[in-house]
Image (cartoon, rainbow, N blue to C red):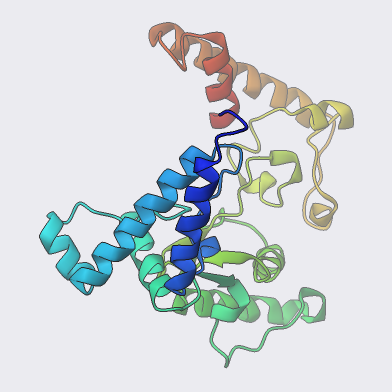
Length: 262
């Protein structure tokens, strides 16, 4: 775009002013691309058109009836049709579209820090917290066998996170994809069969300090991880050989797949 061409800037300002006139905070539902104003303007224009159609129809049901039900709000982040509609309508009504997880729990819930809970109380505290999360539309899907105190500590820490309010359906699986830093590693099939640089440096399976009270890893664990990782690498290479093409046959795409699914 030539420096003297200020048309995209004018369009961008005009679109944003239109949302201001409608008293809609676009920062709640828009992903901005300041380095690509043409893309940002298209997104703003699509959202503005959608807002106007929604206002003319008077609601989701009428709008979907007119369009055959295949029209979804162009908001960000896009999660699922129902989730996007839920957040869009909250946004249109001036309601929050995201908030702290702790703010979604019942006011009757009494929360205690993990270190304040005695060992004989931890299971009851965990059950109470899981029940409160379930009532708020949030599920817990952690690996089996994890000590209750570790589970409670993870969920308690998660309460400070900001989440998209989508009407329910969020599940906490505790997996970031980084096994050496995960409290679930000893109870996770992927965590106990993947060899990481941290394992090589430690000379054994690398475990975070919080796990020391529950499990320990000996030097033999490194050899086991190496063998299991080699089996996974071999299986992957066989799969890639049988499925040539972008993402599998090429080295770049294959390595991306490998790192993602190991």
